[in-house]
Image 1: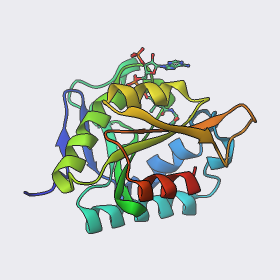
Image 2 (image 1 turned 135 degrees about the vertical axis):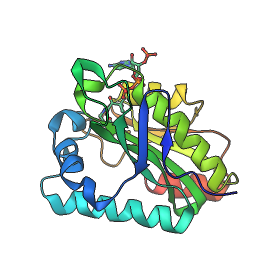
Image 3 (image 1 turned 90 degrees about the horizontal axis):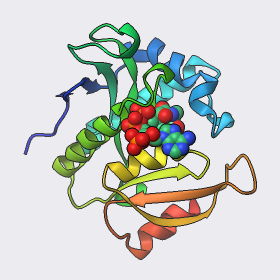
Length: 194
Ligand SMILES: CC(C)(COP(=O)(O)OP(=O)(O)OC[C@H]1O[C@@H](n2cnc3c(N)ncnc32)[C@H](O)[C@@H]1OP(=O)(O)O)[C@@H](O)C(=O)NCCC(=O)NCCS
């Protein structure tokens, strides 16, 4: 089957992330509001966004799916956003141990309208087309309930919870959601990177 690349959902236009998206990606990834749960992840230099885009392109080339540039569709978006406005990135990336990693990061003006849930559904379809044998997982910190809500609404189930290496506070833990049970090797790989 041909891989799913560009997709139009009810309200979004999704295209494989490309170098032309650099300025938009950096704007969102350098915005402290999109890293409230993990301030150390914020991009401080454009090169970090460049590296992220390059990794995304490798995912598309090597596994047939990867992160999308997320734009609002023909109806436009909240607050008068025009059709085609860039609002974030999201999708699945194939990681080590044969796992699809579901991720999403959207500009704050668009939060709370179900856009991440809509793109997560498209990402699960893309993963199922590119390699249905690989589980889809989402790694979330417990201080990020909006992200957990998206993972759950995409149909993923909490499979593991434990200490997080990069947590901002002692009471913050790692939650790993997935669409199916992990093998022993997969869960070991995940815990080593929790
Ligand atoms: C996580 C993120 C992508 C969600 O985007 P979104 O388009 O607002 O998500 P949706 O509207 O599809 O769904 C969000 C859900 O979380 C819920 N939610 C939002 N804030 C919440 C909070 N503080 N506590 C509990 N639930 C919350 C919303 O109510 C909604 O669920 P509902 O519709 O059932 O009420 C967005 O907040 C974001 O980009 N955050 C910064 C980056 C990030 O954290 N990415 C994930 C890293 S793991």
